[in-house]
Amino acid sequence: MTLRDSFGRQITDLRISVTDRCNFRCVYCRSADPENYRGHDEILSWPELDRLARIFLGLGIRKIRVTGGEPLVRDGVEEFISRLHALGFPDLSMTTNGHLLAERSNRLLAAGLGRINISLDSLDPAKFERITRTQSFSKVMYGIDAVQNSRLAPAKLNAVLVRGLNDNEVEAFAQFARDRGVIMRFIEFMPLDADRHWSRDLVVPAAEVHDRIHKRWPLVQVPHERSETARKYRFADGAPGEIGLIASVTQPFCGFCSRIRVTADGKLRTCLFSKEDHDLRFLLRDGASDDDLVAYIRSVVNEKEEGHRINEPGFVPPSRTMVFIGG
Image (cartoon, rainbow, N blue to C red; front, side, top):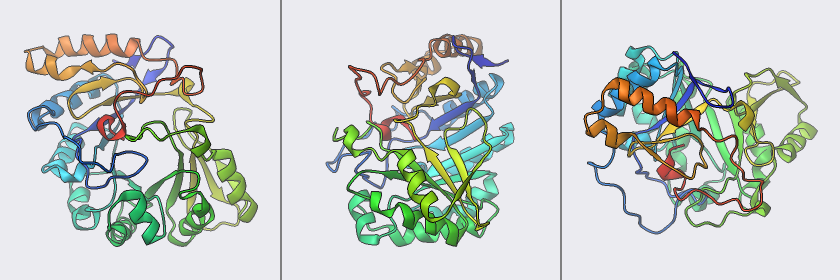
């Protein structure tokens, strides 16, 4: 059984958020003001998440990534990953801000986690504090070291570049990749911030990032799957590390999209920028059978958007911001 949309795209990747809570307040994602999290009864329980994961596996999902908010702030996430591993997902990963990673990495490894993505938006501790509104820089560095000293290496580090904020660190990030042997990925700033400050002037195009790094250290493109979001490059001089460029705004890859998302409160989203949520939680709690859920999921996926429309006149950002959608 496979999932396909009306444009013939096969859906093989699922981002599943386990919490809308986060211990960071990154400027490109969340507001600095206190926010009301959903009550525990409003987010999916672990048994509900387990059931959905099993159903999605049967529908041909092969890559599953556990996200949040920050997934490690929810008790039981390692056990959930262990159950996903036991189900047999070929590609099992997690996205984290790294704050709790050093102390939890051994448990994640034991659970069967296969890959990990860590947010890292500055290499300068003071700037990191301004971006994340935390004092967690050293803890994140310890977390990266823990991953690099484990079978999860090389760590994927994600930097969201914002013009005038951290775009002067492109070369420093590339040097960090060479020094540490990590995969450094640069993500274009998308209109998903809670404060609604996004504008096109704040986007640092992936082509600019490539040219700046290539000028200092020539890059060679690495083959990638058509559905992969990142264009990957290695250093021509043979240095360790890798560069990834995710050009969601300037070079959309919607035509090859293979991804869907489930939010922490049980809404199925077929695009980051979907205007509508599709309520799986109601069906789960209203006695729907597995066959009912499969039929509903298929009908929703069939209507998956052709693209995100950021570059079209009249684009309207989704009502949900990134922390409430799930990275």
